[in-house]
Image 1 (cartoon, chains in turn green, blue):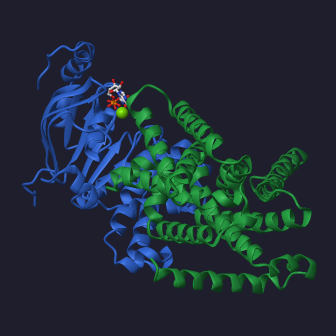
Image 2: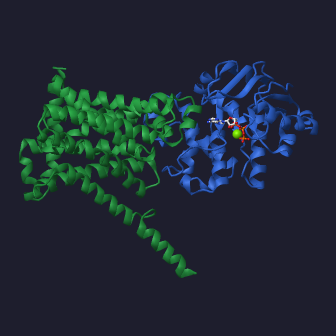
Image 3: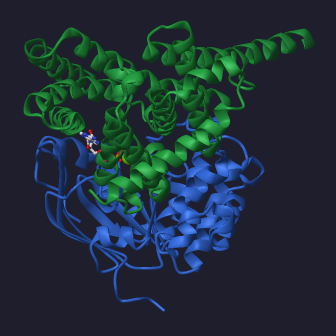
Length: 310
Length: 262
Ligand SMILES: Nc1ncnc2c1ncn2[C@@H]1O[C@H](COP(=O)(O)OP(=O)(O)OP(=O)(O)O)[C@@H](O)[C@H]1O
Ligand SMILES: [Mg+2]
């Protein structure tokens, strides 16, 4: 680990330098804040978070896992609290409780007559409540606010490293398991019939989701991360009928909202997590209105033309 | 020509969903290279029998062998192509008809060299591409290849699902009511395609409610109503007497009766 660290820091420096080349193309007043080290870290974190959330959100949207994403992100809170108590890195606690909750949801769903949406609501509110109670005992409310709503300007190098690692893992997993993941998302029964280990794919995808959520904690926070796991994928779904294109558009939407949101929040001096999500929502709105085939304008235009012909 | 290893062999096979038995004491053996029609009333357990083969239902008791090995290993080897009665897939999925059929090849792609699995499919093994185009031709859906899968009618979707099973070029084709909801010209086309598959030495196992086509095309007919009611040639099994026996099997068997044997 100690030998890896200089290497990882080197990678971060290189990525930052690349980003700064792009930033320096911007007008002076936009580029100025990025002279600061913490702003550069914030920018790189945002780009990475936007990218992996964009990737994962395609699976979340197509698999109808929005509520599961919401559940895992809330369930992360007690893990953060316990890790804080024990002095561990917060992401270990977060990952453990997030994963435990998704296992618990699966178990309730399979062994009782409770349906999955109730199982999710039950588990994540309980976990979230536990987290709130622990945190109210040990930390200040600013700290709680940062966990809930993110604090991208205060991202430490260790958190940036985690985000980088999570991005690499997610990217590699999706690339290597592209076909099994696609087939499982599209048609799980066929995946089973073709001899794929659907249990492993299912839990693997949940682990990736948990990892992404943990990696996005500091940027957008627990409450808003689910927006980044739904909006980019939903936007892309409106714009294309091809899965690879959907992945690309979704990543683009995620990165654009993260970067534009960060810049807007700095120049307007408002909360960064909220601004990032608002930018993503605006992009969705534009797609909803203007998408070439599935957009509202196109749909009404087609109907109007049909009526005009008749 | 006939391989001594049966395509499907069941010994005292039982299956249940949550305590409710749906298949009881099934013992049978289907030879390779033949066309078997599985016939029985609604709720008889026909789809459940296929579910045992594809692993979405685990047997309660008894043994099931495919080509002499466990179903799981044959699934992994790519020897079983399956078409479901009702697709549980996402029709809104952003995928074209052609790529949907290509997913039938995903099992076989595991045996490709690693680099081919990591590059876009145009650079990968051309045999997959050829199998997909041939399968689309066989169900007369080649003209729709570029359409999104959600933009098809119900019958067209069925034909694409059949094309996906054909594209796998597996030794065993498991088809759950492939002709239901398909128009007569397409039905004739599909039956002709399946005839070709059989002459190529493949085993066709097909659940059907369509007696006339079973009479003409099948080598064997399997009558199932929770238990195995009978197995034999179409002429023997699709006689009025046997079909009457098949029908009365239902209510008693459902109430836990133990009658009916072949
Ligand atoms: N997922 C399930 N959970 C519980 N019971 C089931 C399930 N699927 C099927 N069954 C029950 O198992 C029995 C057999 O069902 P199966 O689907 O095998 O019938 P089938 O012979 O294919 O009928 P059909 O001709 O209507 O397709 C039925 O009584 C049904 O109620
Ligand atoms: Mg059925």
